[in-house]
Length: 354
Ligand code: TZP
Ligand code: MG
Image (tube, rainbow, N blue to C red; front, side):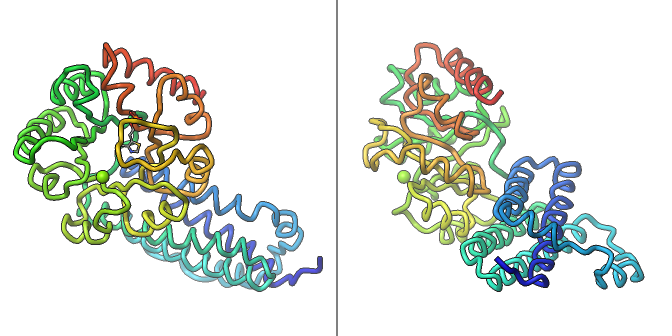
């Protein structure tokens, strides 16, 4: 097919500009802030910037004319921008990335590649949301973030072989778990409050992120790190207005549209599931299977927890498909030896990743 060279060259230049801009920000968050959540999100987007237009690579290279580009001469004769602070460099590069993405979209539309243009529009929206997260970190407003970890544990007293939530949480912490959700549907609020106050103490002392299921009021009262909500709960934006920015909000999702919406709404992480049939959650929808997990692995740039019916025996199926953090309830709370079970699961995850 005959292609319009100026649009191809614009596309080529901006794909490079966007990747380079993302890389600059990524390196600052890698070496200066050591923030793995931001690094992972940016890395994923940078790969998508390349992969989404892979089919056009030969065309882009054939049309590249570095020496006759007047933009290069102008750039070589202009003085270097003076940016000293990391925040200035990050800000300037986000703008560069956003402008580049917009230009990519327009070029793709001009050569009638509408489907690919849509993918870059999606990346631009994701970049807006990561820019906000980076800003909050740089300005010192945000101190909490979803930890980089392999297992997300949840409580379930009725599935804990007679052990209390507190005893189970203690074993999870001793086994090195880095994030725990308090999920308790049966008890009166007064009791939940007392338990969460105790768990807050235990998790703070051990640098464990503490999330409370369903109840944003309980999470705020007990100074938990965050709340986990469902699709039919209050909207993420409304919860955020109540909690402020230094608070983790997670939301369960069951389909690609829900995941994309959650990401745009400023959620810090999503639940992806239920992958398999589970009896732990009562109001649960049918299993979503592996296809939705594969979508999330490819397209979601915020952290996500793969959950629902995950056991030692099927772990390899989800980790093999790219799940990096698994949410597990009954397989862990119901284990004879919780510490040993966690270690076994952890080893299996590692084995699948190598
Ligand atoms: N959200 C989606 S499935 C689920 C939750 C809380 C329950 C998962 O429990 P289990 O025992 O690991 O299947
Ligand atoms: Mg809920």
